[in-house]
Length: 140
Image (cartoon, rainbow, N blue to C red; front, side, top):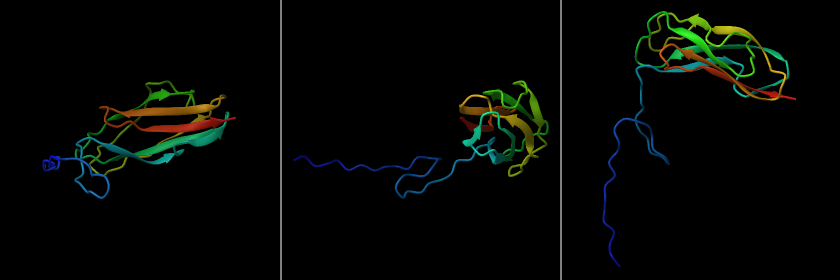
């Protein structure tokens, strides 16, 4: 039988951990965010026409400072739960250093659509590096 040719696996530069017990570095980005204190939590179930509030906070988890005045805009409202036009600027963010959090965005009064299904409300921070959303289900 032929013998196997030995080879060496070189770790990649930058990026993530390995599977099964391997560790690894972390990747950081200049412009990045997390959404915290989101209401409702994703996949919350509501009955048709139930009213609820939508709110969230943006965390700058990148390495760059965001200048004051970045718009947070509603980009999609499946089912029309918020009742405001897509494209509406809902807040301008203050200057945000890495690790800073925004003021609470919202609360917005929302109403579950009159049809059962899965619905998403999408927002965008100016620059396209942060896309907050709220996803919920309407049950019969």
